[in-house]
Image (cartoon, rainbow, N blue to C red; front, side):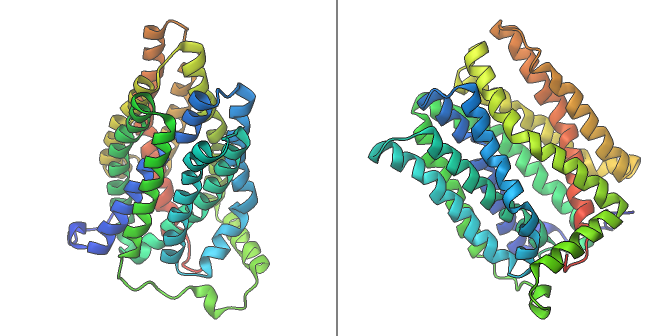
Length: 351
């Protein structure tokens, strides 16, 4: 299956796509600031089990809303979902400094924020993936996703570093304020998009979420490619949130990294991600969609084993943390670009 288009007009001439692109990049900047782990570790001195609970709260949002997000988004304009979810995440994050200064900030509050942000993030991600084909032609999805992924890679270099720098130079609470602002800006940018969006297909059908859920899952199960992608994605999503928080705790408490250098280490992965995004189309043309996704997932997983094997000597440990960022993130990026493009290309509009 070909996901690459013939030469067409530049995407730079599509103002609504540029607004969408900028909004998602701004939102990604906020997400990558890792505010919740920083606040938990630096402000509340969270213990390992508490970090796991915060990560579990984020993962639980997927269990709670992952099933209904798709059918619900089908019933409304995707742009409206994006306009609501980003400001919603801004309010959720803003509650952290409000609680810190006006009341008493507790771990339980962070768990609630993690769950709310994770829930809104699910609807935001589903809506953004479904909304993109209404802004660009489907035969340009691989090119479009590659460009968006390239900007995300640049944002990755900035996001982790910004969160770490603010936390170390000011405070983790200050970082939460900046993160809330990024989500608010993203929502405002989406609000300025003027291109008409196709009417939701579900508007023309009897409203029955249960029937649509069954229809959607039957389609996934019956489609060999989407079935494999769904299983792989479920495994990755189930462990990603918990591992992310535990790595931050391991790095700061066991090895001794300060927030600023740790943010720089994470940001190094953005260089690899940028390279992966820039070469995703070229590699896919040579290897094919499936082999590129397989190569990306396997190599990213294998190189990640270096982090838990890191020794407590901080300079040696730095190498163990940096190598997965430099070598792994680019392969993960190529996998993700092809995964999203494949899903968008083969899925009917009403699903």
